[in-house]
Image 1 (tube, rainbow, N blue to C red):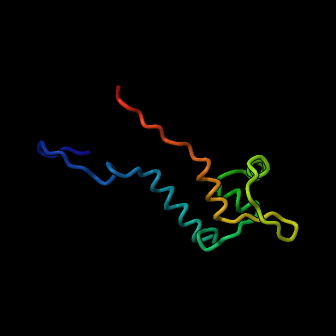
Image 2 (cartoon, rainbow, N blue to C red):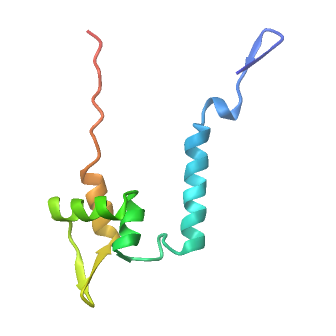
Image 3 (cartoon, one colour):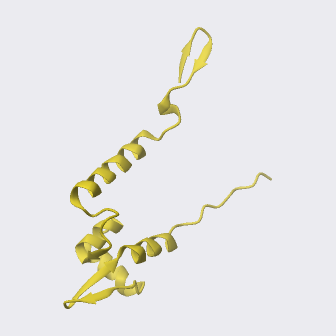
Length: 101
């Protein structure tokens, strides 16, 4: 915020989390340029791990532990984007609302 002649002026950065916005733009550009965005439905193991923001080994452990749905094609695991999105949603932490006492 900046102050001018006793009046309070706001800027866009007062309302937008600029680092988060920049990451979202960068992710969108990366998806667009690499083709791993909305146009692609089925990912291989490495692509699925990257899509979920995990290392390959960490993702493989989660696949086995959480019994993540997969498709077996050509003796390789493939992952449907919709299943990955559903798995991500199911693992989000719930925001607890604090009530004033």
